[in-house]
Length: 114
Image 1 (cartoon, one colour):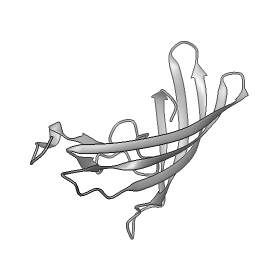
Image 2: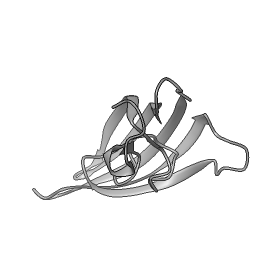
Image 3: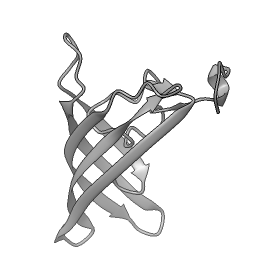
Image 4: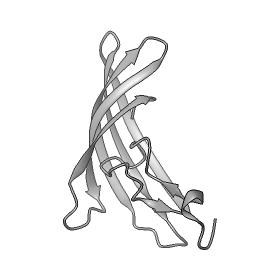
């Protein structure tokens, strides 16, 4: 989408908190376009419990004004029967952190592990 789209038609980092690790999932990252890449590993610890490490990069932007952000995180996942996965982790901002911003954010969710 090009131009001044209304906020409800834009993409944002709200909700899952997993798109860009380290940045809050408060909807502050918003744009009419986005580009995201990620890579991660998951290791079984015991029974339904596993650990995750992940690296994410990308941005939410308008037009061609891209300000790349890179974050990395670690977390713990617990499979809850056939319902899904409960996951908790911490993501840290590696590239794109503004002066005065927090260094990272905690993420908690249910569904596909971050």
